[in-house]
Image (cartoon, rainbow, N blue to C red):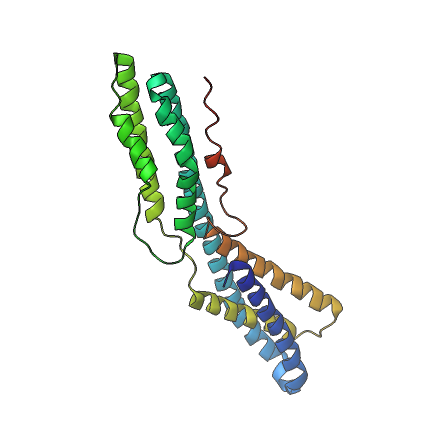
Length: 251
């Protein structure tokens, strides 16, 4: 179930909690709704609400950290590709075929990264043949002077940095929130919203406000689920900057 569907389900469940509280208010005997009962219920719900708020805050912080880390790694890869192309451009005409291969490999390279991060089942790491060929050809360049020798060494180092960042990105598994955890959080929310309507007469204003509160909570969960999977759905990290990092080679 994707983030949007799961968030909508939780929203529907919290609305059900509101209606459950209103139904209990009408059906329970009057002495069950006296001030003593209200105080006990409100104290208990206050504890649950505090736990739910803490958990939501921690989850948002963790999901945002995951998103920022992987977005930064994509930016690092993009920057290294631009630097590598600039070094090869300074190297001179012998590096032009490698620069052309570099441009041809970016599209499949981006496709591989986004596909690996989007799939839910674990798969072994697979290198891109074009990337391996580019790295090998950089190492087999024949420098004619000290400047070209220095540029080749720097280009080899950048390809190594690219490989390391690529491997680090692959090994960082997106931490999707387990469904049992979501189920417990949804249960807490049902209790909280049921308590809101248990001791208050339901009218249009009350129901509308409670519905907005439930929607806000569901939006927070949606945000957590989206941020925890940076390479899919609505908040997906864009691959356009990586794909468009290198322009045409100017003669």
